[in-house]
Image 1: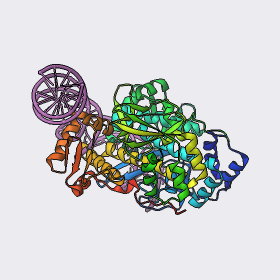
Image 2: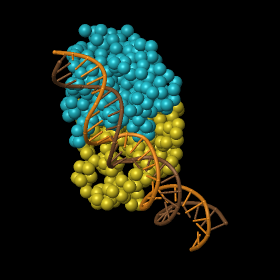
Image 3: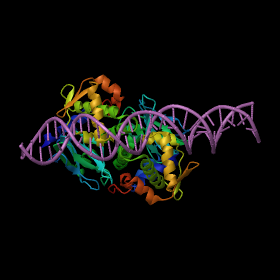
Image 4: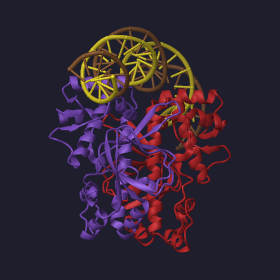
Length: 244
Length: 244
DNA sequence: CGCCTATTTGATCTGATTCAAACAATGTGG
DNA sequence: CCACATTGTTTGAATCAGATCAAATAGGCG
């Protein structure tokens, strides 16, 4: 099903225009598509995957469970993301990949991706670039955990997710579907669920957002960004790669 | 000065054996070497570098300064690291790179690196792999900031640095030079300097480490790892790339 | 010696955690 | 369609890890 890879193509073409051959090579990658329920693992720590996976629909996250039983979430992934590209070059998974909502995921054999990057080095560079942006997002989350208080950290995450979702056409005006529980939010931000709840109340109380029935609406975008110290540069929506 | 690139070669060869041609290509990369004093910037946020840099000697870190004036450090880099490989694919720097100690840094034009990865795709994959390990380290730091208390976070960092330094031959038995002040440690871990000091006292008090005159000695390695919940898998010392 | 930077200690305060319980929403099977 | 179970949100109270403020002490080094 070639159209399954449309989200990926869309993402790559946002950065550099691809030649017809490059597009065709991507769209004809052999993929297997699987549907997952919420709360299931797609890949586990210590696995040695032979395929990469691409999110087509839903919400997926990378995370680790500590000895103490607590969880740290590293990233959220939405349509078009390739959350485990790293398995292409790192044999063993050092974290888990799991769904947070019902999700559709496409799998592509490593061999096929390697052949693609061999035949079309520019595509390889675009994929590399994607993993570098992942890393930039990790860094920004570090800022949130290390140097921002809870309301600012949450606000910052909302600013980020709004822009990433908008970039793949998943916002409706100033709102988007947000099927993420407060407990999960806490695991992502390094906060307790109770404190997430109170910080959300704070953001709501100041009229910056609403969050109801899993729909998040950003009411005062400028104020929210201001509060969060948000600067979208780290998402690198700008950075064109050199032309073909 | 071809021998400047020895640390890089050493690092890459730890993962995959290189052909004579590949080695030659790396060693003959045209480089400029510069010496920096401690506390100086090598690259700044918003810069658009035309070259990559490689740490030959010293201690370098990536960091960001917030509006509030606080600093968040994202990573420490030592000999053999290429802390801004990302500039190869992301036009604009989203953070700073600065020295923490007198350091020697080699610069290589992007064009030269791109030519290298074009002519020797396996080297390109090794470099990509290096940036993926960077990202794995970011994730582990997120665990530290989000889910570990201060002594465990510091202990974890020490475990990591010990192994990374040992891998490039910069340890002497169970000790290594550690020219990092407590304030800097705080900026890396998202802690106040005072609290870093108290946590260090705690580690010392329990006889796990000594830290004196910028020499860190690990007295009880197992206990320190245990305390920190340290598992070196994320450093991927194991993961061989496929053979040539 | 005197300056500057780094470490250490004390006292106080606060953001965030923990524990506990109520409440709301959603879904499921009988 | 209701009863019940389950999952998620909200609130309260007590406690604690870590921040902040302030000042003393200790090293380097020109």
